[in-house]
Amino acid sequence: MANKTKFQAIKGTRDLLPPETELWNRVEQTAREVFGTFGFGEIRLPIFEPTELFARSIGLDTDIVGKEMFTFPDPPLLFNPQFVAGWTKLKELAIAYDPGIGSINQESQELILANSRKWALAAFTGMKWAIESSMADPVTLRPEATASVCRAYIEHGMQALAQPVKLYYMGPMFRRERPQKGRYRQFYQIGAEALEAITPNQDASKSPGKDAAVDAEVIEMVMVYFARLGLEGVQLDINSIGHSAPECRRGYVEKLKAALEKVKDKLGEDSKRRIDTNPLRVLDSKLESEQGIIEKLPRIGDHLCADCAKHYAEVKRQLELRGVAYRENWRLVRGLDYYMRTTFEITARGLGSQNAVCGGGRYDGLVELLGGPPTKGIGFAIGEDRVILSLQEAGKVDMAQGLDVYIAWMGEKTLATAIRAARDLRQAGLRVELPPVEQKFGKALGQADKLGARYALILGEDEVASGQWTLKTLADGTQGKYSEAGLLEFLRRQRGEKVKE
Ligand code: ATP
Ligand code: MG
Image (cartoon, rainbow, N blue to C red; front, side, top):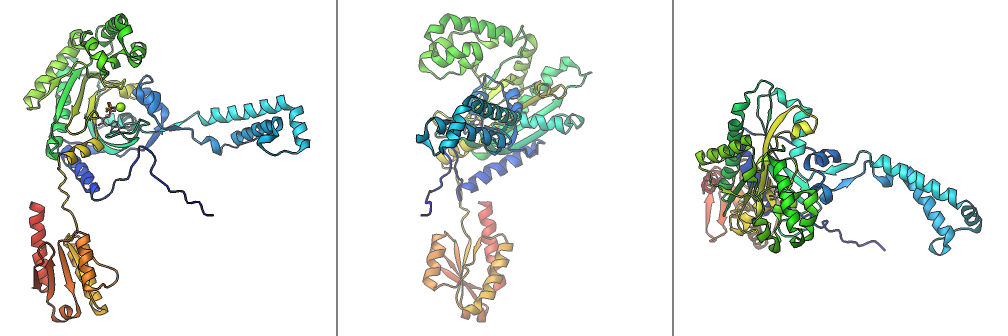
């Protein structure tokens, strides 16, 4: 019998369907427009990259690299003849010991048992070799795109272009997380990065001020974008996590570690583990019982070096100059290793506990870490799925983009006219449905209604003969007669008004 397995989208992935995809398009189109006005150009990146690119940039002790990446050997193990041969040998050995789990003739059974040691070693050696060669260069579905943008900056020698190089991207990202509202395994991000080569004779004394202005403008751009979308309850949190030096973040982390060791017994398992692996992440904890303890921990703001403190003060001043409202949040450390100085996060309404719609920060040195020249960087990633959810919760989904005209043609002789009418109306930008076969009048109107059409164009043999076409407004049932040119003119005008709305 035929296998009737019903295929379903894999857990944590989903189909986006019309009319919701209209909203997705609007969110993406608005990003293109707004980011374009700030001088950002689009970069399109591969969906998979060498695993090492993410491991090195995001950091081994992060959730993303530690447990969320979709990584696979390339070529796949199952296509490796050495692996398959080893597996087959192992299976034969098992059956020779226990014929209950497969069939084997006595002669082979005796042969295998007599040579079992050799048999097992050969199987192991073949499989080990196969696994090692297969895992030598694993690839990973991108969990984020900043590392890819940096890789592309290096690969295309973009330090030779006018600096900063300003790029934006949009597309799917992949993380093996527990799926829930606002958290998927395939989700979508819209992000931007501003990268700037550090030239040897740069005046370092001007640097913190200049960088702060770039940071502030990038943040301003996201806020302008969210305002344009009509996103509600938008809240910007900022912080500075300094830079990795003994007199700055590293010194602070030592103090933090010491303070955490003292209260270790009162912390949950995750935080206990993080004291050694990634103490800053303890500040991220949402665990109720830890909140009082965290409030009393040393704060990074009190331990920034002079340059980082100056940079942070300037970011705040620049944001104020731009009229961008912010809240300082000393616990905002972000989960990725590559951030330094400015970090920020934006939350929005209607999302429950998954309310972060954008995260970003500065990452000077990341390009260098990936083998490129000394380069500064600042960027952000917006969670598009959550932006859409928030807009939907707020009812900001003006998707009155249904069908404009349903052509109810009746009689073979009217078909040529119907086809011409459809072509001309579509050329004028109207959404037209031309049924492939003629329908009875009642059925045609029913179908037009179901499709949410605004008008039905009725083309019978009389209409075609007289050149006077009937247009029915479906909302109120009124109808009028138009010449071909008159109809086009009327619908064009209607459309113009709809676009203005
Ligand atoms: P969170 O704390 O919510 O897990 P994050 O710090 O892991 O977020 P980033 O890596 O900074 O997130 O990604 C930026 C944005 O991408 C987040 O603010 C969020 O809007 C979105 N995002 C991250 N992971 C997911 C996911 N699994 N599903 C949907 N959106 C996501
Ligand atoms: Mg996360």
